[in-house]
Image (cartoon, rainbow, N blue to C red; front, side):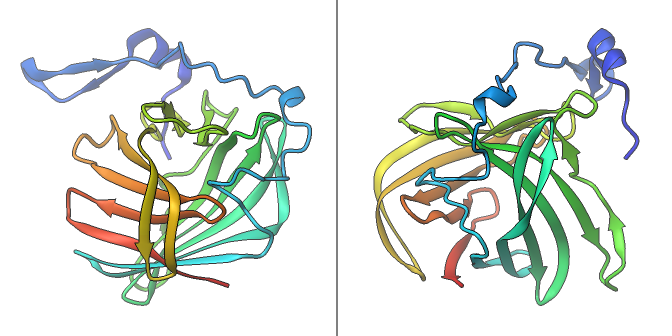
Length: 238
């Protein structure tokens, strides 16, 4: 994608909108996560109970969205990738609408010495209805063009904790806040206790209003889109 240099953005920021209602956004230079290699002695051994990433396991989710039946598959591949000096596991993501593949991505995760799971970026293919590649929108890589990794799941999630899930200015700025703990949640795959809930949002999409639920020992089990009023839920693990 066509991106401005990090230097220019630092100097002038980004102007969003037009006329008298313009809003200036600047890079958050205060965000400096410590992801030095010494903090990742065994980065591919992901043991965080709220985001276990088992080798070869395929998580399958479904939900009826305004665009059609969404079917999502996530699976850790038996490969790694070095990103920003850290060896990451590779998790393949596929999203289908009414049986047609609309997006595929390889996501890069690593766990630090404290048990935090970090998100180091993704390589995305977006598809046209005829199956050809439309673009690679959403791709980003920590350490490239000023992008920084974010927390996918804290080691010790507590009520009220907030964090960046990713940070590539003006391209990938997802954030989360833990809004519920010790919850019981039922999805087609089962009923789980000791779950947590997050509120997910981004400055890039002010209308985005989502909640996600994670079960200890399982991981991500449910997402609620509060804006469009639909759910994506875990239906099986293969």
